[in-house]
Amino acid sequence: MTDTAGVSKAYEGAKQRYADCGVDTERALERLAAVAISLHCWQGDDVGGFEHTAAASGGGIQATGNYPGKARTADELRADLDKAISLIPGTHRLNLHAMYAETAGRVDRNQLQPEHFGAWIDWAKAAGVGMDFNPTYFAHPLADSGFTLSSRDEAVRRFWVEHGIACRRIAAHMGEQLGSASVHNIWIPDGFKDLPADRRRPREILQRSLDEILAERFERRHLLDSLEGKLFGIGSESYVVGSHEFYLGYAVRNRTLLCLDTGHFHPTEEVADKISAVLAFLDEILLHVSRGVRWDSDHVVILSDPLRHLMQELVRGDYLGRVHIGLDYFDASINRVAAWVIGTRCTLKALLLALLEPTAPLQRMEAEGDYTGRLALLEEAKTLPFPAVWEYYCQRSGVPADAGWLDEVRQYERDVLRKRT
Image 1 (tube, rainbow, N blue to C red):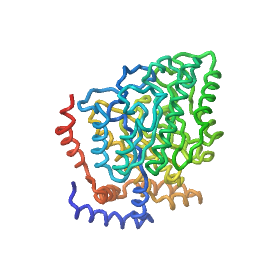
Image 2: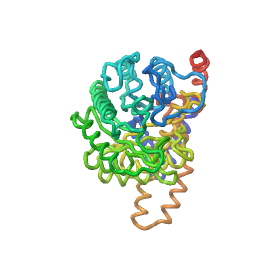
Image 3: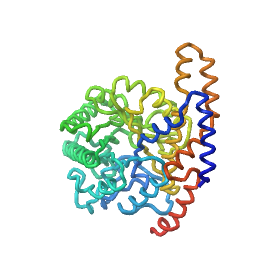
Image 4: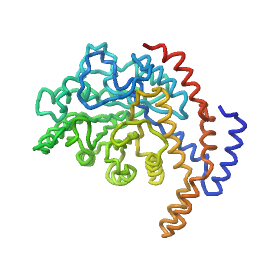
């Protein structure tokens, strides 16, 4: 870790430099510290879960790679999360999938209860973090047809509706127990591999299923419902029932959250541009931060231009209080703990960069038609001493300020991960 005196001295210089541009670094750090990123549990075990049943292929979810040390039990996964969280500045959240229930394989998904997540809730209480929750509509025999909530088979549809109802109750229980609303996010893999002859009927069935799942009322301080669309998936290349447009319409009508997953749109679409459009009609949204390479490949998030654009939009539009941020990727080709740390730290870096931007002068120039000044200031802001502010924030948060975190992950790999067989 960089020496304390050096980091503090560099920060003081950066603080003055930003002040000259009208930016209060202390205020930016306060706002950053108030943001909780929801870490996704499925990065730690390659989206396997702990149901201890013969997993089916349904759903088009696939992690690639065979790096040693994958979590084999819930206790191992929680230990890995503890290590990752210890290397990330700030206080964050956990995003849990229903397939991570601890039932010893004795309970099917439509019969899940809050008690099956008791150990997770106890862990979250001890760690001081909130939890979000997802029903799992894939990797199950009743998902192998490619249809769940939009299935024409009433027995299949009913099973998945019951699963959705159970998961909302579990999420509400988590929110109540942890004193922080749990975002319950619905994503289904339903769709056709080839061109359908009837696009209407599956969406009518899905609408009916959602109405049944969301019929029970919960306090918003305990539960927030969200819907996640997608452009295409493995096995649903030609038609996705739960498309972005379908869920946008449903969310506006029923006042749910809408999830924008950065990997679920055409590669040329700017998800950042969608935020102000949907928030003109919705109270809140969920943002799933991922990185697609040529398709929805869920690569580890890096400090890329699209990520910076996302965070700039949240700050420039004053949307931080209305957007829930979660991560969604899985890479089994590298150290899984490192993948969490890299993605979360990069997301926080992008957000800090946005918070340190001279937003007020930029927007004033734009309103006055001074596009020359706007462009000039945008470019000058790119070379302001951001690293000094980031390292100071890490040091103040008690985590490594530079790449020293990697040494801790490698030591953890030697001591713990390599011993897993």
